[in-house]
View 1 (tube, one colour):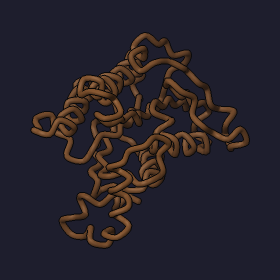
View 2 (cartoon, rainbow, N blue to C red; view 1 turned 90 degrees about the horizontal axis):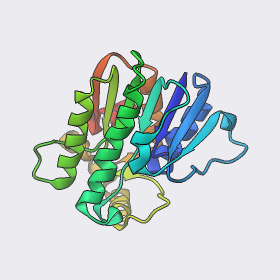
View 3 (tube, one colour; view 1 turned 90 degrees about the vertical axis):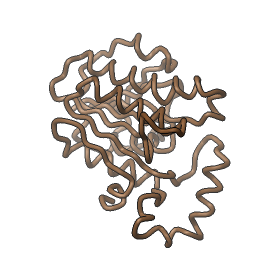
View 4 (cartoon, rainbow, N blue to C red; view 1 turned 60 degrees about the vertical axis):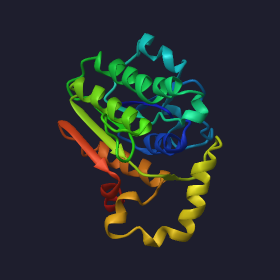
Length: 223
């Protein structure tokens, strides 16, 4: 199979790309994005990696050299990093949908697309972040992708290349409160980025036709 991933330089995407390269079921992996992912030259499967460099607002202009079987979207930013709400939308919604349209244009009847969304994503939410994520999900569902898997994690744990003070604070607090995320609070329990990536890679091999949504609580049960 041939895979394509965007957001491969992010917290989850970095781990997911490594899992895809390690997986013998993928004979080639295209990484699409602004910057090349940091993968060691001696990493197993590195010869399968093909880079397609472009800005996120140029994704819709790409012509892929081969038909993609599995697509993985790990794009995500913050309003502070993006600079404005509109800039946030351009990454977390428009670029995600553009990537999906790029793949669906190939008309592969067995296409799988995995997307990282967020806990409590809802197109009608009064919370801007959740609303944008929900609208993104809604747009993807409207594309009638043969196999669509949506992952809705809570706070992601792990070392980022970029600085996100609030997430850093959240990770620090989790070190002292992690044991309290039981029962109803399991919904909000943070998740390790590498574990999410591992789960995504595993679930890609079990995908079925239609839309599957993995809530944060489900993810902890799958790990």
